[in-house]
Image 1 (cartoon, one colour):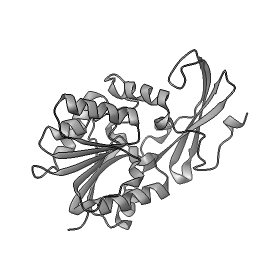
Image 2 (spheres, rainbow, N blue to C red):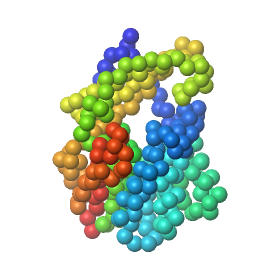
Image 3 (tube, rainbow, N blue to C red):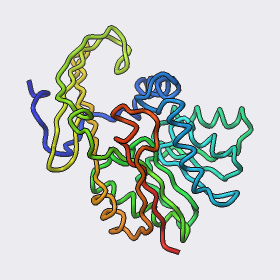
Image 4 (spheres, rainbow, N blue to C red):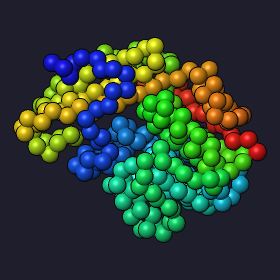
Length: 275
């Protein structure tokens, strides 16, 4: 079956789950469930991430943007400290939820439903954040485009803070995967479907593909592909330097959990645009 064949590196899937009305509702539920860390980290890790960010909020009333903000888990907390916060995310459901919560809590947070690759501000922000290894889902071309746009959007001396999966415990992070299951109604469809899951490791490129092939009773066959990159410190420093960033600091063990998506398997990065 063709779904089990390793695709060409960065060959796109057939659909994007973030813009699917049904799937995005399921994603929002997962984001908001404190017992699941498939879309957002668990509460203790969120707390530790915020504490890490607060270390660099050096003055009151900073202009801060969170890229891939989802339903506003980080933005609402940062705004409580008196900063001017903007959140940007691709998911209409997540942004709608975030806006509603900001209104309920009387928080003046700007939320924008937009692909963050189209970021187009000029010297507006003191700090831009990108959390939960979101940076690693981008292709090299997309990362370059985003870094250039972030550099432009930051004020002179502004900071960019993000986290990535590092190159520790690779076999545990990305085990060989081949499985299937049948659901009457589940994450991918509200009607019966068959799900085939395949994992492919592109070791020379430090990238892993998890592919979900969904076949439903209408006989449609749709592939969702999720590319996940991991990085070593040398690659991170070289990449940021290429786009003009300086004062590049890397931090391991920011998060409390020792599982493969947290603890010392994640590296946090802080860097600055030159003054």
